[in-house]
Structure formats: structure tokens, C-alpha cells
Image (cartoon, rainbow, N blue to C red; front, top):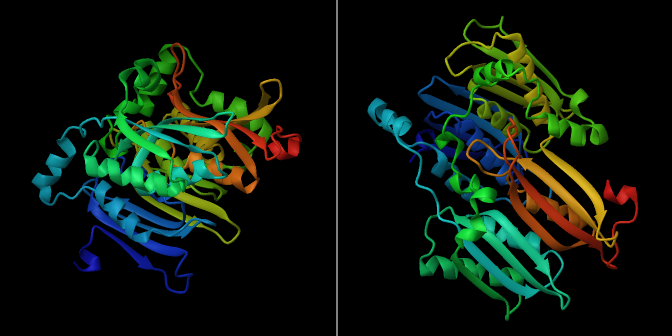
Length: 431
């Protein structure tokens, strides 16, 4: 198949570092939420978007991203191409395209429990997360404990993206990869269907319905959100808890510029974003507009030499109209600012009579009920670089209490200490 005919092509960028940068081109039938899925995949591979063009006529889309590997992230270009091809609609012709857009969501995946017993060593959790990612396994819940004898019990609630579990060959494949990663001949590994009581309705029911954003049922539109808020005389946004818990300590909102212009074109509202570039920025913006059913018809992203990112998105509401309501514009601007400045919420405190330090990382789910990619992997990489030890970790879904606009969020909890067994002593270490 010629490159021009490929759904996904990944090309060398001339004049750039051949090992570090590539141009990713995608040409396929359009689906609402596909841009979010593609940028999520790029983030999942540890890639930064340094330039991007996105366009669609509502039936067919064409995406071009120039991406760069982040420091210490290995290249997996062929694997990236394969996984991008899996998430792109492959229908041809108007009738086939209608079948794609009108079909139901994929059947729910069955959860499995991966249990690993081994002896502790530095960096083992980080290495395990990478191996499971390479095996195309999604971890949606985890519980890691270290016993007094330095024995570690790792419990991972997983989905097999290849949909081959519980076939024996797939179980053996994953367990062999895990044992090789742990590097201990006596390490034990098993995979079984997850017990129903470990996936209780009150804790992980959202995750059990996970799917790609393009396959997710439409969420409440921005117009419906504003109408409900006005009718209930509520002014609270579901983003308020994020701002209160983090922005005062870390700042950042004032460094994000977001404007909405309806004069450039009569058909679309133009969202202009200028802020400091970082990994996952485009995904966070695309996830945010998808969450409130805003459609992106055209987008352009460019990272300047001063590491500032500028993005222009031509968008419409779900009914194909511009965003003209002033309060709706203010709500959209606030959500985009929050997404750009605060992709996660981080809190650190001493616990258990100040014998260890608790690190909490809270991340939003996307419209397909999937957690943010690479959180555990990136956090454990940072802890390893600081020579900090993780002796207990949990990943789970935290659902809001009572009637609120706030959606379920993914919690990553780590209990850490220094190599000498003591908690983090100084505020500088915690920061």
C-alpha cells in the first residue's frame, strides 16, 4: 500500500533528529471524538505535539501531527502506527460511513485480575507498568503492598485491549513478560476473571463502561449544562474543586490566555489558546471540548521557539451553531484554562504519625470513562529519579458524593519514603 493510501503513515521529518521526531498523518472517515482518541494515543506513547493540523468536513478527516519524543522515552514508531490504525474508522463510501456512525458501542470488556508476587527491588512498579503497556493491557485499578519481609504483592485489575483473555496463550504471554520484567525465577504470576465484589458498583462502575471517545454516548452539551445551571440558580462549575485545591499553591491559570471570536467566520466560533507548552496539552484541550459535546471542524497547533504553544480551534455546538451566549463562552474559556494549566491535581502530606509521605495525584476521566494515560508510569519514573521508594500504591476511581456537576475522577495514591526509610523531610523535596 502506498503511503498516500494508508490510513496512518509515520514519516521521518527532514532536517530533524531522525530518532526523536516524526510526522504522523491520518486520513480516515470522521467520528466525533476521534481527535481526542488520537491525541490521547500520542500522549500514551510519551510524545509531545510540536505542530498540528486537523480538518474535517463532517464525513472525512485529515490529521497531521509533528511529534517529538520526551526525554528518556523509547521510540515505538511501528507500534504507534499499529495502535492508531486500530482506533481509526476504516469504512469506505457513504453507506459504510453511515453504518459506522450509527452502530452501537463496542461490547463491554471483561475485567481480569493480574496478581504478581515477588521480592521488592527499586523501580519494579515502574517497569511493570511499562511491560503491561507494551502488552496492550490497560490497568484501571491497582493495589500494591510491600510486606515486612520485603515481599511485594501487586494486584492489577486489567482489560485486555487485544480481547484475547482468558485464552491460555494470552495468559502465558502476559505472565512471561511480567516474570522477565521482575527478574526473579521464583516470582509468581496469575490472571483470573476479576471477582465481582472487587469491581463493586459504588466504586468502579464507570470504568467498566470504558470505551474510545468516538464510541462514547454524547455527554451533556454546553448549552444543556448552562440551561440546567440557570434553572437551578447554581453557579458552581465542576472545575471549581480543581482550582481551589491546586492553583493557589502552584499557579498557572493566569499564564493561560483563551479567547473566543465569532467574527472570523459566520459558521464557527474560533477559540484561540496561548500558554506554556507541555506533554499532553493538546489531548487535555480536546478532551475538555469533547466532554461538553463541542465539535472541532478545524484546528491548528504550533509550538514556538520560546516553548509557548498557540492553538486555534474552529468549533460549533452540537446543533452546528456558533457559541454566542456570553455565559457559555465564559464557561468554555474557564474549562479550557483549567485543562491547560491543571491537567492533574497533586497533594503531598505526611501520614501514619509522619513515618512516611503520601502522594496523591487526581486526574479526570475522558468521555469514554478512561483515566489519563501514563500517570502511574510518569509518577514512578519521577520517584525513581529522586531515589524514593514506593512501599504501597493504589489506583482507583473516586466518585463524587451527592448531586454535583463533578464527574468521577481517577485517584493515584502512593506511600513513599527515602532510601533510609524516613519520610520526605523538607518542603523542597515535597515540591
